[in-house]
Length: 337
Image (cartoon, rainbow, N blue to C red):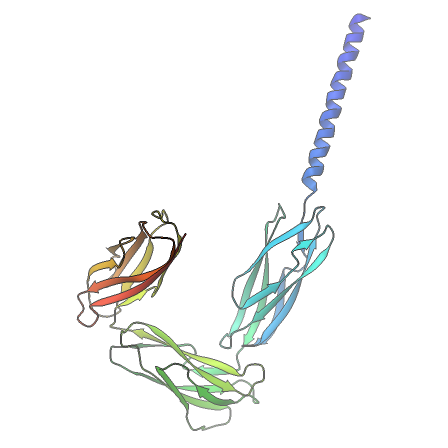
């Protein structure tokens, strides 16, 4: 009897422990399942054909399929042409609408896709990606193409005549203007219906280097009243630096551990050498390295500390052996915290 009672007591204790473990497992399972879950029935929206320069709006239905409130903390777009509005909180089972607005560029042509990223507290899918797709139909076709890239040499002015044809019979070019001092444009006499010729003259900058300018075509279309004609000058013999302005972003008063910022100094035609590179402050150190390619150098800029809090701006001076471009100055900016 004593032995039997002991075995029964042990069996009861084992059963109690098993019950407690089972209860704990159930509580954990419930805790895991009790979470927000973002669901989108149609994550891709096909806009169809859209006139280049026109605007389209679409809606995405967002549903919280979980058991806890869904918090949408951020919505990011792949292009500044897309803006959104959206609900910040969705209760369990609730559906809200994300409104997306696409403002297309007047020079887009063919298929385009834009992405929207929804960031939420969904533990299984913290980032959900949505897509917009459209087939762009430009109102005007250009010969040579728009944008237009043209090589030039020092002292050379750029002049180009563009032949422009309307895709729709009702669309007309009513005028052409330029807000840039270095560019002039005029409509030439029309030789046939639906086709125009525009003459563009551009004076490249005296400092040389690549540049971009634009003239504006006025149209009779109610939704796209203006279309830019973009001209890029590509210097053949000037020393060019990319990027043209250095943004260091936010830095501290101590030296930065971030990788150095890179400047590419090059020329398409003609040999040159960099003699020296220096910044107008001891807080910014510059190092020149050859890249292995002809007439291409790499300048590394590193912040070594010492700046006082506030906005800092200055210039990096690159000295070369070229008599026409003995020095090239590159502005820099930073915010010191």
